[in-house]
Amino acid sequence: MNIQNLLSNKIYQALLTAGANPDCEPQVCQTSNPQFGDYQANGIMEIAKNIGLQPRFLAERVVNLLQLNDIAYKVDIVDPGFINIFLQSSWLEKHLFAALSCPRLGIKAVLPKTIVVDYSSPNVAKEMHVGHLRSTIIGDASVRTLSFLGHTVIRANHIGDWGTQFGMLIAYLEKVQYTNETTINLSKLENFYRAAKQHYDEDLEFAKRARSYTVQLQKGNEYCRQLWRKLVDITISQNQKIYERLNVTLTREDIMGESLYSTMLSDIVEDLKEKGMAVVNKGASIIFLNEFKNKEGNPMGVIIQKKDGAYLYTTTDIACAKYRYETLQANRVIYYVDSRQHQHLVQAWTIARKAGYIPESVSFEHHMFGMILGKDKKPFKTRAGNTIKLVDLLDEALERARRVVLAKHPAIDTKELETLAKIIGIGALKYADLSKNRNTDYVFNWDNMLTFEGNTAPYIQYAYARIISIFKRIKEDNQNLNKQFFLKTTSEHQLAVHLLKLEETITIIASRGTPHVLCSYLYDLAVLFSTFYEKCPILKTADAALRESRLQLAILTARTIKQGLDLLGIQTVERM
Ligand code: ARG
Image (cartoon, rainbow, N blue to C red; front, side):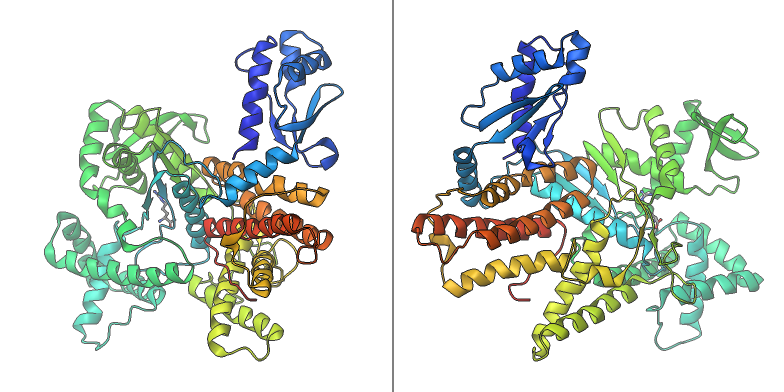
């Protein structure tokens, strides 16, 4: 059920009949104050101005034409021309019934598109750090939501597994293998990378070998390939553990790293030269883009091949865009990449579009995100000033959650403690991030995320567990409920309307990739449930039908919370 859509369409039709232009927008939205009803249309003033009518006059005409008899019990006009809609209980009851009867909570599947989502995308021979958290979990929430709505989603983990640094890494791997270290410990990838770099900077012989290995690797030399594979494999298995701990849906199959496009690069550069887009300047191939200006105000030059023959990050992203359209047949491509890479991505797509590799009809979207900051409002770092490894962050979340759980249940057994700590700790960490508007930076705060008060995962998970406990207490199987709803009080009405807003909420995430909207929705749901539970006795209600209805509101709330958290990649527990 998408109430916003339904009302929007009806008001739009009425507006057309009332003489508005076809491009008019009724601007239907949820009200912020129940005094103004459940939904309101805010577009009348502007539309009236465009066709030279008094807003109040147009609003009256629209309301007269609107046929909301079975949907709304009241439609008010408020000066100068707002339309406020008060939804009818019987209509809500019918739709709650439909939601409760349906495993998808009454949410319709959409016309499926093929959507490629580029997310997580860490680099080989480097550990995942806090900077990869946002891409990984926001991207995964988006993927889960798009899939739930019925789209064909292709997860693309664009790992950095190609480039000139690989000669150096291979040479170093060869060295530590050759010097017969019994175990090649790559578990500390960061150290490995640093040591390789140090050798490269200090040992001329080594540097020379490293450079030749880069060339050999690109030519497909089997020996170099093997060592490279090893580095990639170790990194992937290490990251895979993190994905599993984070409850992120990425698997090995989703890896489409930079190397995948390496064989396309020379043809692309040639083609761009032939098309007259790329020019050769001092041996390098450059594309000047009018759309972007450099500091002097001249078209910005984007290098696609260096004079030593090396290709660049941009060249790969041009090829990658082409591949996603041509080979994967994407209708839409979304990138969850930090905001600093915005210009890079837009330049690659601009080139790909101009070259005719991707058509206008296929959208390429950068769903960028800001940084995670420390308490000092500077990029979140360790005390020693190093970047924070994702593993360490996960360990700490777990440890802190253990303490929270133990404080509540000192006698809990170890197994349950571990399960709870994992679900609460990881849930809290993810939720704290997902609940912030992705476009902005935010300050990381352990204490806030793990409280049971306010807009946190534990608060919502707790609301879920509490509802489950009601059912445990009465030992009633929620399958036996007869599915008739009766909305008698304001708090039942408000909870009902909110329950039916799930579809419009997740539709927003599908289009804009903003999971914080779902977080706010779930938080509000938990708050509304709590008011309802306070004001409307369930088990003590004598009227059997009303008792059933309230139980059903409770179970529908629980299912909605569970589904919503699942779309965010957050688990629930039945006891907290
Ligand atoms: N590997 C890059 C990084 O760690 C992110 C890649 C994003 N995706 C892309 N198609 N460029 O910053």
